[in-house]
Length: 166
Image 1 (tube, rainbow, N blue to C red):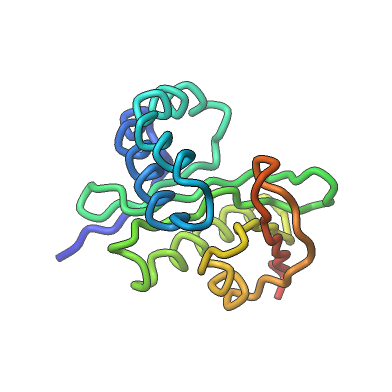
Image 2 (image 1 turned 45 degrees about the vertical axis):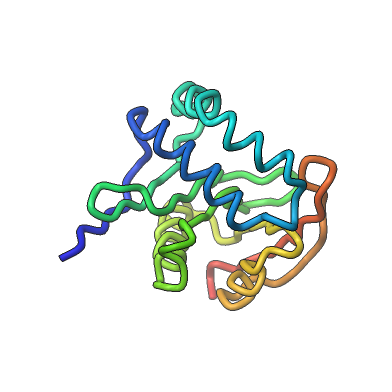
């Protein structure tokens, strides 16, 4: 019997989460972003873990999905988005490759939506790198493509708007 839990990220999660981030980026973005960037994520896991540990208070809306106490996914969002009124933004919504297509991404998304709506916010933005298969996932969830923007001044990102009142 599996023990599936969504909970706030803790300092103790930092090392495991840093490894998960590097792993997901290397499986999701291979061929989309340059190999050097991906390799540096793997090499920099310890530094990434330290940053995650330090910024825990700055990022209060950061949740992990655990299965039998192992992190298999996470989401991070902010309640404000520059240039948009009453609009939150999910900056991170990932599930490890071996757990994808099992409903865990949608579970994390719905959890984030409920949290966002509990703060009286009725719109949401999500950016997704062009070429990432998750673009289809966000369209399927009801996201409407509204614009492109650049991620790290290098990579094209598609931006989707969700009306949370529907």
